[in-house]
Picture (cartoon, one colour):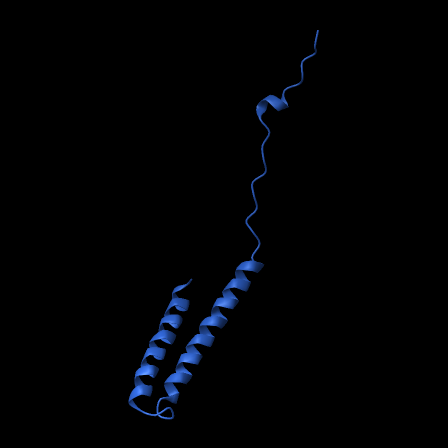
Length: 81
């Protein structure tokens, strides 16, 4: 998880905690903006995470180095007597 994703998830959880406390103190209409902040942070987090996963999936894997043959296999076979 990247730093930006971690910050967005933390902002979403922090806003959720603030919304719960504000909801207990006031009415739903007065704390509605905090609920919208929670959903905005959460949807942004989900969008960025999905974009990163798709980008990683489309990136080709690094090429493996070709296997080298041992020197013994390069030598000519000996004739049997």
